[in-house]
Image (tube, rainbow, N blue to C red):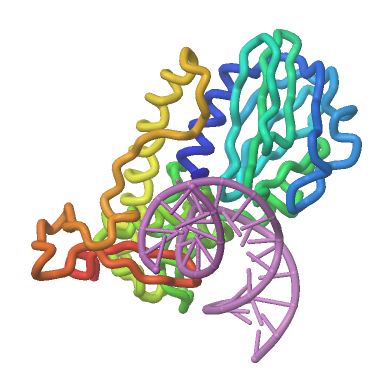
Length: 280
DNA sequence: CGGCAAACCTGCGAGC
DNA sequence: TGCTCGCAGGTTTGCC
């Protein structure tokens, strides 16, 4: 379930657990995912100190003391687990296990193997293909109505698909695209370039609100995690429309019997959930 | 270049 | 109980 808020939550936990630690062992359990792991990955990581863990779009950036960055993308079903001390029995879909000097382990697990692990050389952080074309971070101050409108200008694709386009805005996935459009009252079928300035402002604000709320919800699980040894980035969150086809719209209080409630449509091969009455 | 569909994999729940 | 089908949070590629 990794969209921006989940990756943000995971990075927060990694920052606490791994910052300053020295990598002592790297268990590369498969040759790679869709993209092969970087060659000689284990040797390149060994004895490196982890300076920080941060997020860019949906990527986890593990910054190392020699200027390199271990870049992890979790794809559709990827997970990061932290394991503190003692032996660890690898699971079936554990692909990469990084063990630090104090026994802390970071495990990258991805059943569907849609994830990605890259190693960026010093200075490649802004030039590497994976990061170069990414749009602005929606939680940055500079991301506002005019900024969003500028990105959408002239786009004929529907606004839902535009929100998923990482080159336009970074980090929004299928869940939060639906949620943000619902909150903004914007019909997901609208052409991206057709939004008025006021609508773009409302949508930009909704994106921020929805993402921040999800991060906040993830943060509470993060706290639990530290005692529970569970999974990172896996939290209960209440969605207004996502996966709620046929349920009543929480915004306009319309009766399910009269309006049909939340609708599900397919756009660009992906499910979109919305309320046709509230979103215009 | 823009827009769209398909491909990449595995797991899970629904329905028969 | 066990099988098949459809669907799943993302990105890349290739085609028009």
